[in-house]
Image 1 (cartoon, helix red, strand yellow):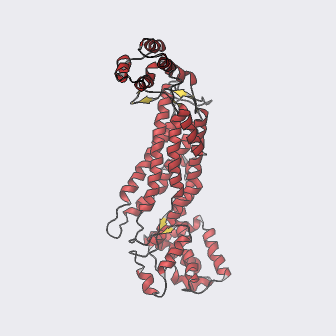
Image 2: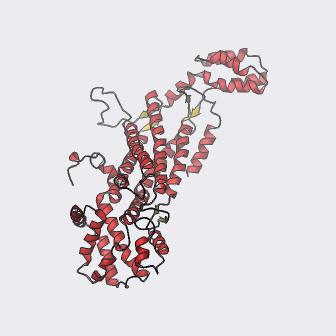
Image 3: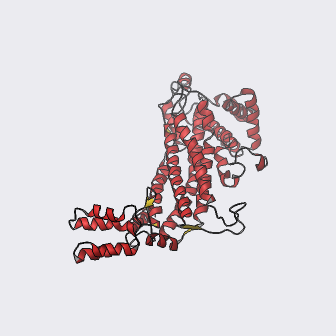
Length: 455
């Protein structure tokens, strides 16, 4: 491999240790390998329906060997053909002809790529790569992130903190509840991603099985197509042009984009909590936060994640805009865009890994959180005015507004107001029981519900 220092993409250079598992699904080598496998799988499929002769055990083994032992040299051979043909799928067909022409399978060479259009091979291969990369790489990484967030929620489920709305001090919550909201949102999206079934098509050059029907009209090509695609645990789509309508894939990308958007929100909130001193970061020996300011410990993992999530979503957004549109039966502008799937997923994976790294470094500054609550007794005015409403005070809101709007109240200020307000002893006791630390409503119970649902 080229020295990583000279690679154009940071996914293959600077961040290769994180993104390298995706190469087995989205590299040029993987795309060539997977399409060669599909072309070879067509022969036993045609044999099974009686269109070509039965294959011997040794011939089946030979086909399996070509697929299993597909090498870099094989990929280079295909690329050599492509330099002449300027057509990658035809180059694969010529490569396979060369592999089989001196074997007992020589009589079946004309059945390679029989009745197919290139897109039949391409879309199935890419659907498989999207599904398998999800199952083997993305979901394990996502589940790891969810477990770290869940651990944080459990640790701080009952720790009171000052909430903010519009950036201003608001009624209290708990730190665990703040993160539980993210956990709940992400869990729903995780289920959508994991449950997605990928579509594929084998319908010919304009989606009508023209060539297959012309050559062998006695065959049930709808059943053949369905069986061939379902054999890969994909969902057949028969309402196609030359290309598969990408709506199904776009729903998957939209689910990824939603996750990334939620995680941008989380990254920005954590950044703010660190900036405000609510969260502390562990100091790593030898790490440097600034070339000139030795005291700094920067939230670099969350900043890295936010940037990579943005890059990923830019591509995922483009897929929704571009791949839902194709001129007439198709144009090749979709092909070059689809070759970037690994880039969007690579930046997504990199962000998720960085978020895990960041989560491992943060902890609550409980003293800071307590000090913030103690400094803002005005935030219990919501509870106080609601207690007054409950006993029939029509001017409850206006009374508290005059006392608190635009002001910061101390504990002494609040208690002085409670002593002066004209209420009965029971109501006064309820008002006196309020404090910024205790006025958290059902935050703990709600957090525990999310914890239970997250498993």
